[in-house]
Image 1: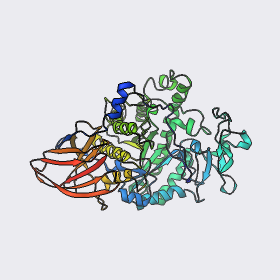
Image 2: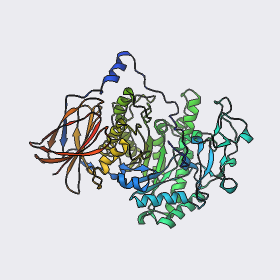
Image 3: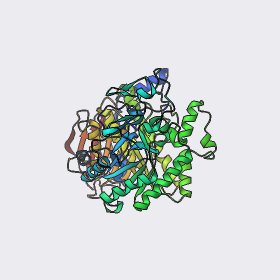
Image 4: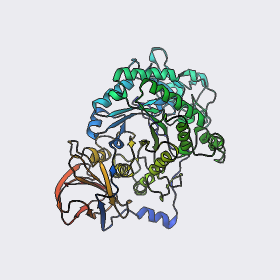
Length: 553
């Protein structure tokens, strides 16, 4: 969603189609601004090592476009090759069209070798110990290049006239808006910058990947993603697909592509629908576009093709009738109140602390234009249970809560990792990798490589209850390799220390715990050991901190 190009140019980050901020009034706003700013005097964390036990899938700790060094440092098991430009990746030319992210240009990768970008990505992932997730285009068009591998614009100024803006590096590449900066240029010729794609052409790429890297059972690519946020091609790639895809268009494209992939590699896993967010869970691309133009009162696909069903459940039921072509249910999710920005105002930090509830809490109403309970992970798992095959893995293959260079972004990321494990999510890939110097990067290491030697949070989730997860959240898991009980305590309040009591049930009654902590000082510190006895461990955690206790059992 966030980045289409790997060209090194700055990419404008797309917001939601009609996002607006949450607005509170009077005393309610004052309450929101102060709640969570100061610490509670003390918090008891009730841990029961026998309750709510289930495995934590390590695939929840995935990333996107990571280097070998990052994959190793983060001990990341998944690396996703995704983003808007992958919808138009021409593997034969090793080129992409950047769509709305960068002036609708077909852009060459440095090498003219067919499939070089993807092959390099797979090689990087393997060298870093991660599995690759590869996006397969379904748009119907892929990039073409000019003479000498020159870039080609979809909205040439010479052909379509003066426009609102042009690429600062190429004055002929317009942004597709007329000079009034509001009227899109319509009726452009896709062949200006694209060539038509087909299932057969994509199958040659899959065959190339299998020939180069082996099949999925022998170290090759396992996960193939069915395009990237296809319902909003009418926005991201309106130069090639100006009308949002109908529900049956995407259904049929996935059926054809899945069959083609599995004809080459029967063990490969198909991941879909890779949709952008809230509206796309319920409405096809055609309906999203049509409704926006008609006051959000009419949804033709949902009323006719989908027989009143929400979009993703309808897709699942249709794919089930076709014989299980999709192996992983995947979506993207970004909080829609601005949390994925660099805003670290007091109001935004407190919202960021609360809004992770959208992943699990059925009673939390999203404080954004969504204005409804999201409870994303339970919702997706319920859809799989009802409308598809029970036990089908559920994935969030893009997410980001922002503020990467601030401790507030780090505590949000730590909270997300904990929620993924506790709620039984099967896979996740963060968009993308934060800077290695950032607190958020180190928050990820707190779960996966807190000591620099590959030590990680436990892999069997157990119960950890707190009174108010907006101020302090906690997650607990047993680590099977050594039997340790690991407890992650995330202090979210903006000011003041919090006294914490770990009340341990069905665990070792006494011992000495190792302690690791990340604070705004931006260093993972190995602190002095802390003893516990009588099933009780007491400590004090700073404001905006992430503390890991490793209790030998």
